[in-house]
Image (cartoon, rainbow over all chains, first blue to last red):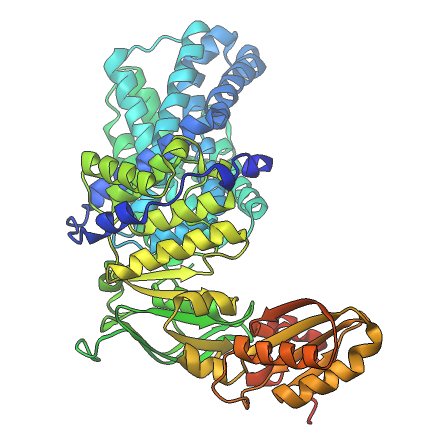
Length: 282
Length: 339
């Protein structure tokens, strides 16, 4: 911020009103971009932001590494006899948990961005309205992919082996990224709904902690009390974790994949329109 | 519903926007002819920005109607968006991106192909004297550079109507002049400009018609000439060599100019507010007359300056209250003084 005055206007080249006039004469307007093209352009904006501020990748690199190491060694001995055996069970789950947790930052960045003048310009453009939000989520999908690759690498160093091979791993990551994209519409909603960054963070925590911890990521739900099993077995995170675990292990967990896709669709159908309504009213 | 053919770029009737208890815009009627610069003049909190945001489809009006080139801003928002551009009070570009990236991004969003967007961005940066700064993040730009990139972003496609919301607030006089030049160039090519400003001289420099807005209402509307004649031609500030001569000078000014004369705290200074009664003489002519009268009377003038009527004076003349008295600051408002 303090660098705002580094370049003084004194050294500025003058405005060339002649070449300006020549540019203004061109009155032809290209046809409006398609919904896809506008969304991809906003996705490109998200990537440019990562390029200019690479530190923001911290949460998709250092945080996931910490999660894998922490839980593998914390629970490994107690739950599976050794960390090396536990990671075989844990890795797909912790992958799901970390990436779903990271989606939370979408709400924060929407909330801080929306106050800036550039949003007024985006909103005054004749483009497909949701493309601004879709662009965010496309940029975030890249972040989720980075996080997945980082965790998988750490997991493999610790001894994780995916029986499903490259195909199974790719399918698992693809499903995870797709689900996270759909799930993030909750955060875009909160980002637009709540007034401060702090409240977005606070509400996000209240949603994300129960949802990720009350699942089958760490242990088999069979040991849980009945009422909790009822919740855990029907949680979208449990379905997603089971599906990813299955895919990476080389199985084809059709029911779990279907449940995951169903939940993903539900999130988009419910929270997408709410987000867009808030966006239009902002 | 209305008037595609009326030659109006903007037409509003009874436009209202409320925020809670505050009626930020309280029944605004505007008729902006196409192809001109239309000035909307008013102090902070008068409702200028809110009006612009409604016209640019960013805010939904709570009452009344607004048409841009005959299109309703609510029901036909998309048509309106296709023809207008907005430069807001704060730079409406992405500060994290470079100048080039901003323009290419917006070019792509307007439907240009990659190469066309790049070419147009480069040409605009060149025309705006920003080629050297093209690769720097906008957050490193100076105030004047931000304004330029902002306006450049607004004319990627030549708009039919350009909203300039306080384009020179916070700029040094030099950058301000450059913005004015840009605005003139844009209008010369047929674009209509709606300019909001707090500065009377800015509206004077650029606009052909002016609406004065206060507390969400239009309190005066007309050509520059009409508006000025309602507030007088300006004021003459004098510094005398000898404080003793001040009462004599004041008396002389009162008689020759038919002006209200105010004695300043500084013992040798006085100000004459030129009235409208002095006929068709310009302020400069009146001032010349005053100076020669003073010289004949043997009064030595050390320093002399001619002031344009300020926005404060316009407001005082039109509303009987000054600019600091608008709703934002109304908590400690004194009772209206009836003179």
